[in-house]
Length: 242
Image (cartoon, rainbow, N blue to C red; front, side):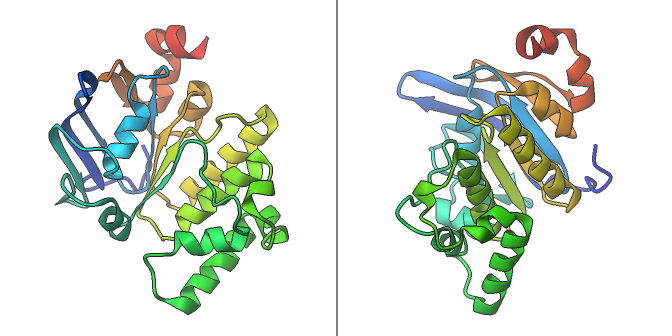
């Protein structure tokens, strides 16, 4: 676990249950993320990983349980309120404003803020972090490569200055070389003290950069512990590591 991950959890989910019609998507899920940690949630397609992130962002309704952020109950909060409190999500599939420029997409990420000078400073910080985006600042987002769009999605989320970054399948659809680059970015964010909850199909990569991990199977948590231990857990190796 990260040395900075002490004290009360930054995010705490207790007994969370979510249904889509008659389908039970999550059942009595409890997990926590502490400040400074990278925590990963792994599992097969349809296990409920993205639903968990969408519930934290308050995009899907909760049918039972509680979500607390910074000790504040956000179970009934609106999505826009959650962003203002300090949670930013990088959604699966990136979801750029394709017909807007890289710069306009970054400005969108700061829509909850009014500190114009600091917003401009943060844009330049993102261009320092992602030099390729700086080179393409006037380019339409829809014309970027998949890897560049993923960088832009992460940079856009960071523009809200989040206390917690939710990453949903950042490697999806990307070539292996690009995936390694994206995970180096996540590692650098971790070293900079950004708190991350990561949902990822590539269990080996996710466990290699995380402090702790949870395994979700058919809407239920089945295994939890330090990521290094899950890398060598026979059940995890058999099911997810090949």
